[in-house]
Image (cartoon, rainbow, N blue to C red; front, side, top):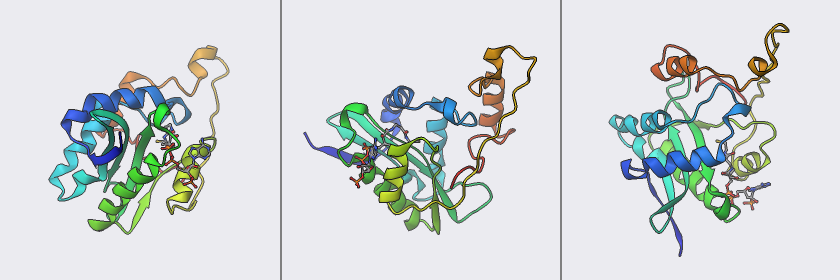
Length: 185
Ligand SMILES: CC(C)(COP(=O)(O)OP(=O)(O)OC[C@H]1O[C@@H](n2cnc3c(N)ncnc32)[C@H](O)[C@@H]1OP(=O)(O)O)[C@@H](O)C(=O)NCCC(=O)NCCS
């Protein structure tokens, strides 16, 4: 069956969450978190005309096999948009689905006035870097996360993956800058 690209809606939430949980490794970018809230916040931006269509899913029948979440929010720039999350299920990768998702997202964001779409790619993520390069993105800046561990802390606590739930909730509530920190863009 052909895979179709359609705007994401509430009915897709659970499948999008579950697919993200399967494929994202948020420990490589410890300032990000993947949750139902992350997805819902993108859907909540429907009060901005046209923005809801910056979030798309790839459907194989009723099954979500890919998604992209974009928004018109990137730091303090009103005219820069952010393609924040994209994923394709492993059994559907390599078929051009992500290219189609990026295209749908960027077309929507440009249509509502974005002068740039920004995305950030972790240095070792070759698939993502190739996807973005092929989709017309070029490297603009590189930010390296330098980490100095506390030598007295137990080994486990020194890991970059040890983001506490309280910090995550501060990020989600907007009291701590988190998901939108400038990185490599
Ligand atoms: C990145 C990802 C979305 C790509 O999805 P995909 O549907 O397989 O990508 P496409 O088939 O559209 O391929 C896009 C381009 O990237 C290339 N590409 C895809 N996977 C690649 C890989 N592992 N290594 C090198 N190039 C790759 C393809 O060859 C294609 O280039 P082309 O158009 O010149 O042929 C997918 O690998 C994924 O879900 N990864 C895990 C989640 C993730 O890391 N997301 C990004 C951070 S939010």
